[in-house]
Length: 260
Image (cartoon, rainbow, N blue to C red):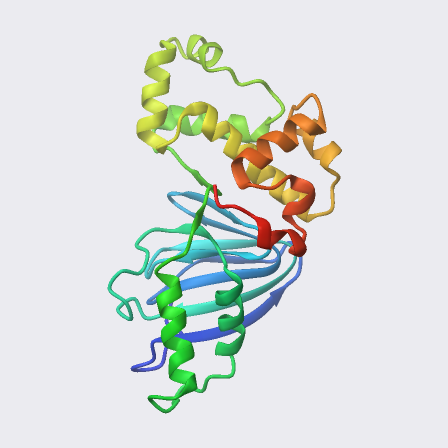
């Protein structure tokens, strides 16, 4: 399904949609670029290149004509900007999870009151132009889990996702596949752009996002992911995302968050 939410000569359109936990949108694409801002809840975006997990207060950028499906975890308030891909020459060209600054968040809210036929030179035009400028500077967050195309590695990645509590040591897996650890490491890096250990860590982060969004405790999530203690899990989470998991879903903590 191909959709374009922009009227002729319109640079940007804002749409607000709320979703219940478990809602999904099947594979579709848009003729324009898209920024989905998750005000509450978590949005999971899937393409044939991988999975992007969008926590509350953050967003995901999708270039035009990228086929994607959506899954919503928790009660999601989504505020979406549909953007003409030619509105700025240097808009992001890749899917990416991004930080939403306080300024951009307020601009998104303000854009809902801007009419399609706003007069040039006024406040409405300045709101739209400033949003377009801000979209060029979106800080990227490490919440993308790339998919390999190699069938053997794809099977391995699915096995890892199915049992994230296991140790998943590179050399042990390489022995099982009858190849050297160095060969497996090179193949994995070439296919995903990540080191094997980084891919496993990121898979755990994304799984933790789901569980924390549904209200599971940090202790339960840590044990389910194979960590010996909540402190070990929290340390990994903080190294990756800048704040501990107990604060990541807390709006008051977002202003202090650093970008990894």
